[in-house]
Every structure is written in C-alpha cells, then in structure tokens.
Amino acid sequence: MEKVLLFSNSKKVFEVTNTITSGKYKLSWCTYDSLKENQYPHSDIIIMHFDRKMTKDGTFESIIKVKGRLGHAIPILALIEEGDPQDIFSILNAGAYDYLEKTDDMQKYKKKIDELALWNWYLKHSNQKNSSDD
Image 1 (cartoon, rainbow, N blue to C red):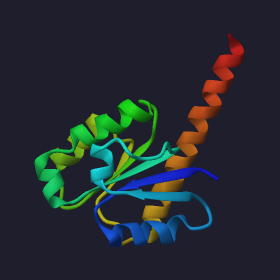
Image 2 (image 1 turned 180 degrees about the horizontal axis):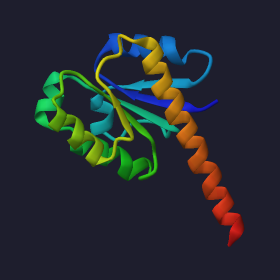
Image 3 (image 1 turned 120 degrees about the vertical axis):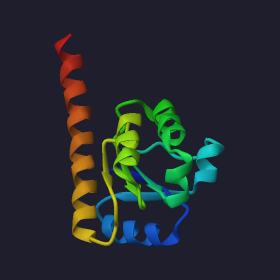
C-alpha cells in the first residue's frame, strides 16, 4: 500500500483526503509545523495544501524543503486555495507535479491522487529497469 503524506493545517482538507484515500492508500497527516521541524515520515506521494495566506506568502520553500529531504522525483500534488495563474505557475515551477484548486469535486481529487500513484509506480519501475541495464 502506497504511503500518502498530507501537509495541511486544515482538518477539513484532512477529512476529505482521508475519505478519498481510505482503503487504497496509507494516509499520514502533518501540519506545516512538522515540516519546519523536519518531523514527518517518508512517503511515496505528497499532497501539500496551501491556503490563501500561504499562497500569498510564498510556497517555494515548503516544496523545495520536501524535495530536498524526500528526493527530487517525489510526486507532489498542490492544493491551492484562491491562487491566481502566477501562483499556480510558481508552484509547478518549484517542483509540484500537479495542482488542484478545490477539493470539492472528490472524483477529480481522487483521480489526481491515483495519477500521482501511477507516476510514482512508473518512476520506481523505470529506475529498476535502468539499474538492471547497467
């Protein structure tokens, strides 16, 4: 079972994510305080929720910190509240794999998580294949 790590300060976002991932993925929830302290588990997939204030204050450091600790290939889904196109571009440019502006559409949210899981599977298997080719 793949491990999903959600960074969010919102219990509502956790509850929605928990409903979507239940039975299919092992979900861990950490606040951004855990990120600051580097106290979070290694995972296969990362979901980072950026509320309106965080989007305006900048999100690059959080994404870069996670990628620095868990690897540059770690797939990250950014949940962006009220971000403008420049915010979205900046988050993707910082290293997020994909983004979602609202978690209201549970089917769309689930599809994004499943796509990250598929991408993670591909990365792991392509690395194993490349290693065996050496």
